[in-house]
View 1: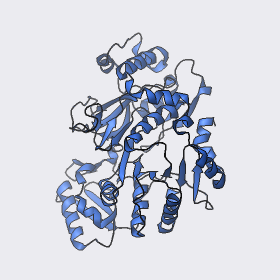
View 2: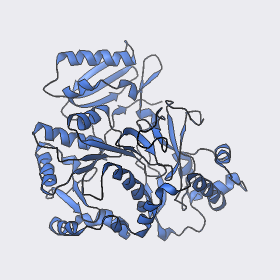
View 3: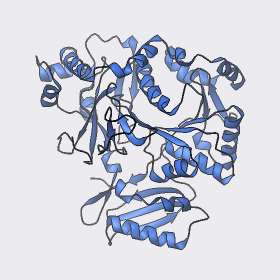
View 4: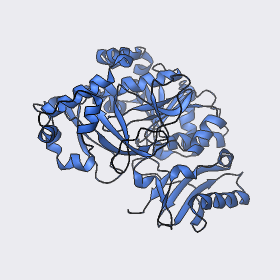
Length: 447
């Protein structure tokens, strides 16, 4: 394990009392992350994205067997050349030709091997430079600064499983207090809240489902959450009920960001817009429909495809990520048209569609509810096990009434058809994946 990886994961295992001392001494802000990080952060908005794209494409054609074998002596001079000649690839293509994607003379001692999440099946192995954190953190921190974050301590509630004798761990370098999302209940939520209060932690970094669950317990226990300034929500889509509860009911701001293991695209919201601002200097972002056509118009649902700007040891050009969204039809009131905006980003195509009995399908976003209903429920999830049927998992609270059930049945039949078989199933907990992530729709339909 290299130093950067150890700082990120290994140092957490040190005793809390010792790490808290180191944490209090950490007043170094950006200097903790090194000179390369600071230089990138300083010039991040001056990067010529078009030049980066063209340079990376020509580098890949010259130095990477996969592209050299397919494109020979092709020279890319413009973005139009890139779009015309470079074909889209996906995970299956990369896994079938993995060795060919490794660039010539790559020093494996300067790289690490990672895998994607594998939510659609077998995870994909990918080679990354050891300095990958520098690139990603600079862009991520840039966007968090839009909300006033300035290397402040974060309460992290994501995919960590802690030993039974530890309520939390401390990473003094990254300034993280790390909690166990898998242990979350009323008793543990009180412990998390008490630690945050005691150490003045105003920022939560979590899966949206984990932040929502924790804050719901805080509400039930009548705990003061006014000291919490921001929820930094990553790795899952933020559902309408989560956004409504956190932002409208608790008055806590939300920064939601999109990224993925392949590190090709990064996008995040800002204080003026919940839309995802695509970082043009991070990587090249495209939207493509099921027939492989590039989407340029707003409102057209398609798959995100990305091209790396920095990974020269294993370059991916026009890689289809398996994540789906559409371009927004408006600009940001703060940033104008400096960023291309994306609507909510959903996971793989088969995890965003509900299949109707008439042979068609309805997008998950079409099921969005009016915000009033969110005051009556503490959780909502969809399960489709057969075509034409939908099970709605609901955690009701004490405001829930029979008329809410009648409204929901009408709402879902209106979206899926009057012949749709709708079941409302009341539960104490929603279904969480083994990696700690939440899926709004769990689909068992094979297409």
